View (cartoon, rainbow, N blue to C red):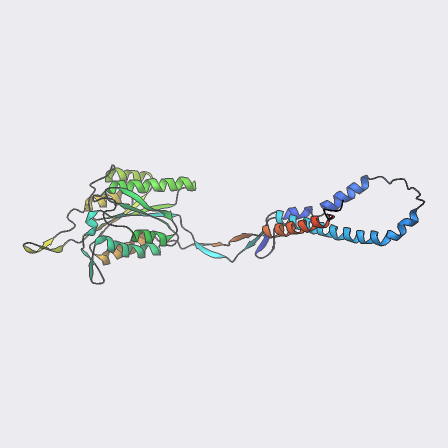
Length: 343
């Protein structure tokens, strides 16, 4: 029950027990029968102790008041007082978004540019993907890195800064030189399934953004098998083929033009995307890669609806601590301190 804005008792009815000690005391007093009054011949001797009796009564009243205050504080603690902080708007989203990034040996090919400088494909991917991750407010984001093997670099989390930091730490060849596209998709499905079991409910939207510059050459799952597994679990896959179509290289015979993306399996990547309800994109340079991530933002928009969240602060410890302190004082007042040498 809320007494005023920002404060309430979870179990307000507990405070109804406040008069309980008084009722018990009245009930016990009613059970006592009046005793026979005896005439005491030396009653006059008690007259001198009237002041002492008055002091004892005052001390008893003080203890009774202290005990009553302790009882009130204990009831307040039992009623679980709660203070609500200022309301904070939180974005609402049911989307789990996984990013699978190829870190095989071919990702070190320097056919991309950033600020006029030639960079390798992984470095360009890191820069562009950071902006994409930063925009995904309200989504749980996870990161999978794959080469010969696939592994989870970051589990699904709302902590976008951690995802960006761990993406920056990825290194070409760390997972092997080959490319296991099928295993990367299979791992994504497995992680999303585990996440749904932990939450006891499936997310409304599950998305995988897979970026690679090659063809499946390793792993236990073929891309076709992995796509069928993704369809079964309702996973939408957006695939990105990365790499320039032409590149000038220096050789013994002078400058030569080569196609650094000759091994890119565009047909296979396109099939995976179409079968799972996603799309295939082709990035020849950094500008196109940035546009692709912007298009994915449009296809999978971030959350717009918001809920109001008010942090709760439990306050029961304060009345409980004060009741304990007053209890120690009451106990100390009821003990007659006597020197150890006097018996």
